[in-house]
Amino acid sequence: MTSLCGGTKVVEVTSLSAEESRVPAATTDHAQTGAVTELELRDVTVTFGGLTALSGVGLALQHGQVHGVIGPNGAGKTTLFNVACGFVRPDTGTIERAGRPVPGLRTRDLAGLGMARTLQGLGLFDRMTVLENVMVGAERHARSGFAAALLATLGSSRDEAALRERAREVLDGLGIAHHADRYPTSLPYPVRKRVALARALAADPEVLLLDEPASGLSGSEIEELGDLVRTLAGRTSVLLVEHHMDLVMRVCDHITVLDFGRVIASGPPDVVRDDPAVLAAYLGESVA
Amino acid sequence: MQQFLNTALSGLTLGMVYAAFALALVLIFRATRVVNFAQAPMAIVTTFIALTIIDDGHSYWLAFVAALASGLVLGAVIERVVIRPVEGKSEINAVILTLGLFIVLHGVAAVVFGNRFRSFPAPFGIRGFEVGDTTIALTGFGVFQIVSVLVVMALLVLLFRFTDLGLRMRAAAYSPEVSRLLGVRVGRMLTLGWALASLVGSLAGLLIAGGSLVHPSYMDSVVVFGFVAAVLGGLDSPVGAVVGGLVLGLSLSFVSGYVGSQLVALAALLILVLVLTLRPGGLFGTAQERRV
View 1 (cartoon, each protein chain N blue to C red):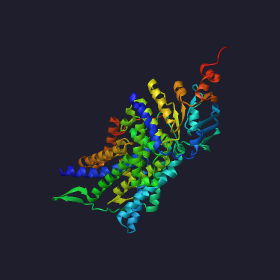
View 2: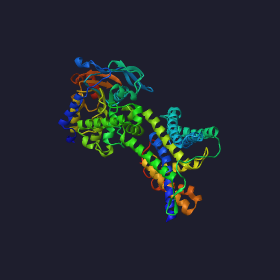
View 3: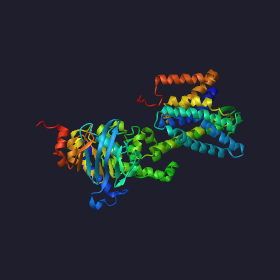
View 4: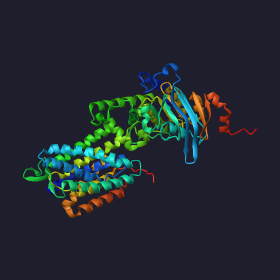
């Protein structure tokens, strides 16, 4: 699987972003400070029936950073993620995208807000080729009006060519361009994961939400994934839910630790690693 | 030999019309998992719109275009107004609604356009071509039927295979949730799907009506065969719908020509049972697991 994401290929991802002039909706002044908050969740509480999944959770994703969310099983990581992408409406709490509140965030708003997410189950379109899958993701990138597309005018066919071109670029950047014409079901799982990632990246999102990107990958593939995520951080901010502790410690700039729906620690990897509350959550209370 | 040729030719024409009707059903089914029982009365309404325009002294072609356009609008309106409120609920809700629409549109057509037989003109000759000194069972209008269905199919293939709009429609049909996540306007895609299906249905209506009598229930027999054709093809495959339509049209034509026309309906049922026994998913259907 090393051929899938050799180091040179990974570099191409970044060069790809350099030539794109990003036109972020509300993040014009992040360049000089580097401290702009791309996505902020404040005081989020979610209950399912009598069960409190999240209680007063806050999280701030800084521009250009990789932000990890970790915690034992059932800590509420996935719920937090679902809140961030509009799958779950929080009972209380606010979501801000680049300083602007987004009340009643819905899934369909996500692309328009410059956000993209990968799914644990991948959710690839099985009856479309890899290239077409990525083209659907590139949607936000090149689009003409509904009416123009409806009439299948010249404009929309040019659009289609642009989408195709864009999708190829992204696939090439992830080193899977040679699979472009195949169907997802015919590909091994790690490649499919890359296709799902390519589809999310195709829109050139400013915020990328990765849901357990390492699950189902082998040790060396996780290594490569880590490198990839680091290069992605140059062009987009990444929020990442992950079980694989080594990966999280290696790639994240900032880590939020959840346990029983509460934030028990938050900070850089080195700080979080030695936090007694985190150790207790993962290893149990010390008997002494 | 001559009888064989004639039977095959009339089967082909008939099959094309079934194929168009089946295609209209498939377009909606694969996007929404809803069998649109109202397809036939929708086509009846647009056919009567065309007839009204023709009776006012305008050309057939103006009426033809008007019927297709009104089909497009009718489909979109029905999706927005009737189907949208139950979107995301169990599919059976929408199916029942289309059954209701079937009855309502039927009644409306009878009230507005009159519950009597009226003749519908054909733009081309409806006498068989003469080859040598024999007349074959292919008419000018028959050629028009075949060609127009082929053109519509080609346009649909172009739309779904080679445009980004078609790509989005396929994505929305395959997985609405994921598509929404990727920024696809799933609602619009559904509306457009209904509009297109209704347009194809209108075409089928016009092709059946041409050169014969129309009545608020003139499509009833075609509805049944159209459904059979769609199911034969697997209900979610456009290619299947076309093949199903042709298979059915040809078989029924041969049954009618060689065995007896009173056995046509029985033969359709027999073919359906046979195909579904051997291939429960239909000829081109993909077997799929469903949540129960």
